[in-house]
Length: 282
Image (cartoon, rainbow, N blue to C red; front, side, top):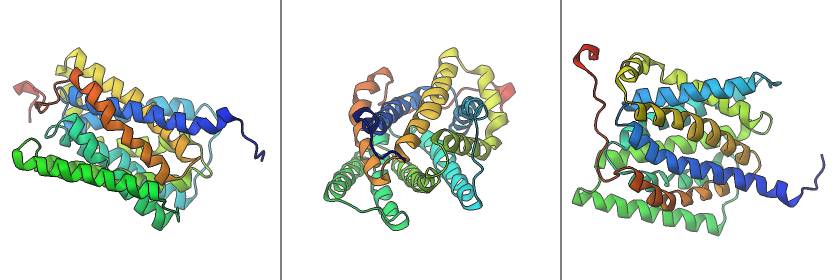
């Protein structure tokens, strides 16, 4: 292997991570907007199914690597927790807290990632990573105190923390597989597993799709193409070329971006439940 890397090649992982962070920041707002037309489970299934189809088209057009049993188990774990549980739980959480609060709470994930990576991936912790974890935890404490003034739902806070833990486990599970399998293939497998996990929501998705406004469908398609298909792939690309703990630190850029994007959606109001005509209800 050629050990020499051009400056551009060295910066590609960072650029890929930044693409993911920007798109995921937009996702917090997009979830809130799409949540006005789709329930949490159907919304997760819709974006994951679209992502699986788009990524599958690319993966199946090129050579693939057959995963070992251990790699397959890790991919299933990442797919169920990070792509399945995380999506459904975060969608539900954003019905109870605003987009900015949700992004701050989910930022406890880097703390989990650093701890899990140290135990399972033998990654070294650094003072900067520990300081970042302390700052993130401090933000979570402040938001938790805000619940006493009813500015955030306690259930929503708990759901965000569950989402954070799910994503952290998924990142650490995905990391070893990327040593041998491409980021594109890994993301496709995980996305497909997540879609299968959410498959029980298919009938409800079809009912809500029929009555959803064009704007709601557009937001769902946006989530499936950009924060799902592109962002998870660029994140996997960066994860394959760096430590999980250090990469997770880039997520601290999400809240400032949310603060700028949030005015596009009235973040101070919970997303109402989708309206389904009586004929479609069960």
